Length: 359
Image 1: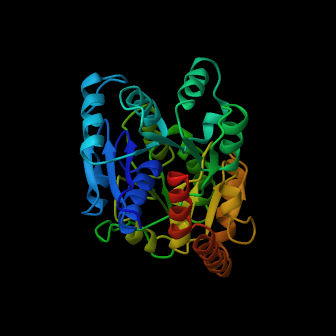
Image 2: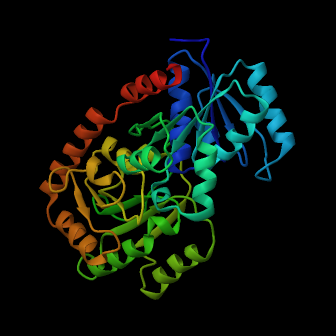
Image 3: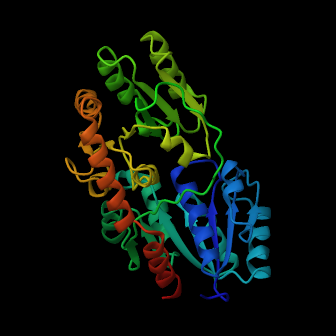
């Protein structure tokens, strides 16, 4: 495609999260297109490093502070030595990219905004992002709401909406899920409060009385913080420890989802969750909350069930609908798969991305 085009994805870490997965997928896809593709983890390496294409160059800075001159100088040297002209900064790495611009003004910065809650920013944090965004050559937003925010609030002239794309990379088969076949509910989401696992647990508790042989499986990083303690406490207090299982970070997502029966997301806020697209690749029927782009990915009543956020009764009702109707599970899962294949392809994403890079 264009070997002279040098691009580096920049992200805080390569832990297994939605933005991190997408950064790795983009780096790999650009490499497949023959582009000089790199990725940089500024603060932590992380488990996703093993999913990188062997031809994607990796840089780890081990940055400890927001402004750290040694990391900035090392990064600038890396850009020059590897003929990199574009920094593709994901989420909070935008500030680090902004710092580079002062020492290396010729580099282009594309900011990829994955964080749906940014539309509610105000005060000092908002004004910092607005100021920093003046130095960006383009902003990619994962949903329409964020794109409108970028155009109207940040006043950015090159702001686009670009849908995420899913890609199963890791082919390992080691995570065996507990519970009975055809009776497993899975959530792919780090244990963060915004993902609202507690609401999901409330819903599961409601249906568990009637469907005690169904199980719930949490796949995602456990930060062992207060929120994590609340989740574990809820499970124990409600005697769900034989029915709800926490696995932590896993890379063999394709293998995990093959063992699942229903895919769920109970978030309070989202951009466009990659996990929702991964459920589609696995042909899973889904229950999701009506946040971010979820209701555009999933056609309620046709390719899945979309319910009001923070409403455990509605979520429980949707789960029960699937549990009691195998035909609906299969038809919704098949339709979700077809929609994801049609609307969220890697080919479309990369062609649009390269247009932005070269415009």
